[in-house]
Image 1: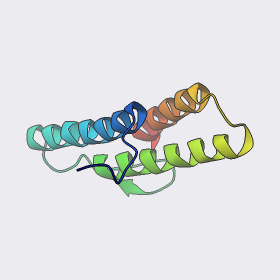
Image 2 (image 1 turned 45 degrees about the vertical axis):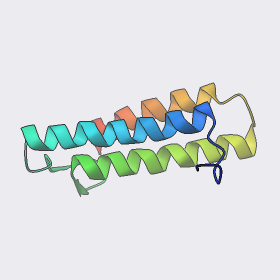
Image 3 (image 1 turned 180 degrees about the vertical axis):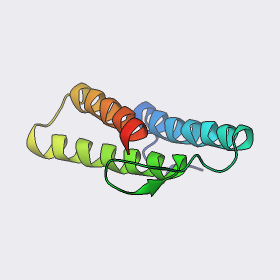
Length: 92
């Protein structure tokens, strides 16, 4: 049924992580409605969902750049992406 995509454990973990983050955002939106808008260092007014999208997009760029310039293993870009995502939710 799902043979059209290479469902490996890392692929499944990425999707589980993304959907888990979305579920956390849904719970936060129900508990604290309004998206908690704020103006960050870039001068953008962002909500929690915007910051999640920016962090996911940035993480994909970090991984692609790492694969292009360095190759494997991918533990370092994972650490860099986590730190970048924390900074994104904190400052952007």
